[in-house]
Image (cartoon, rainbow, N blue to C red; front, side, top):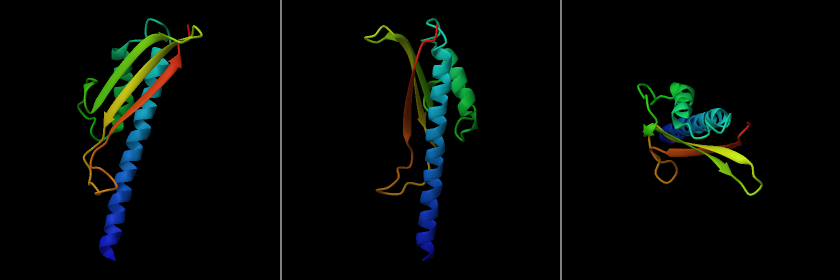
Length: 125
């Protein structure tokens, strides 16, 4: 019975790390799009968005020493302004985050995930 309990514990621990990473990446994308949607000038400011994303993800275990957003574990892309068919302009931020290498469970959980979260917001000015 003990090996099954260890197996379940490892699965729950890994799933917890992955959910924490997913929530962190979504939160970072939201914070960055709030910044880029402040004006048409900042709509494509990937450097400013990167600074905010790095600050938001600083508590992640594999983010110590990461100072740029051009390669994994974090890639940030800000695009905009984009205009829809109604004439509204939007800013879009994409955050790609790679999780830690954890214990894989064959058929259930991979050892590492690359999460991509995209947030879009109408430009406010």
